[in-house]
Length: 210
Image (cartoon, rainbow, N blue to C red; front, side):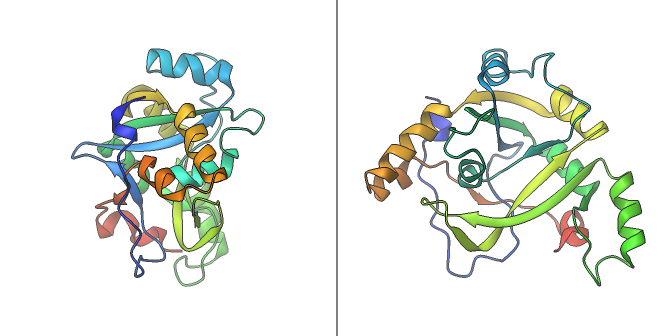
């Protein structure tokens, strides 16, 4: 198992903002998660690049939160989501996607009207959803976690330019899940990737406040 995915996380503070990007990141990269069928996920992890079968014409959703990914893929048990990938991408690319993203739903006061929001949505190569963060039991928490959908130009850049490494962390998902089932939450917590607030500037998020 790659050591970078076994560090203990910083506990979530009681005053965690309702909409905040929390992720494993370095000065130049951020780690996001996706889940695929083994026939796609395995070669991606082996080569560090998405294979030809990966469809660039479809929207692909990346999640900085490991536990939200576990909620989405059912601890790597759902059909077509049995292989969990940790994809390390450049912060430059991630920030580009945020800058060019549109919220996936209309927000009164943020958008002039629904027609303007729909125009932005059609033009934007990326979109953002804020979904409830999850705990080890995959229950919803009061604060939200970001999902970033990439399409068109953003999807191509993600696969061809931004991706630094791809690691199969399915074993980690199973290991953490087994500890949760055994009610050993302290050991499970110790295995979670360390996710910290991502230093996104105001100009990156001001148009994405839900």
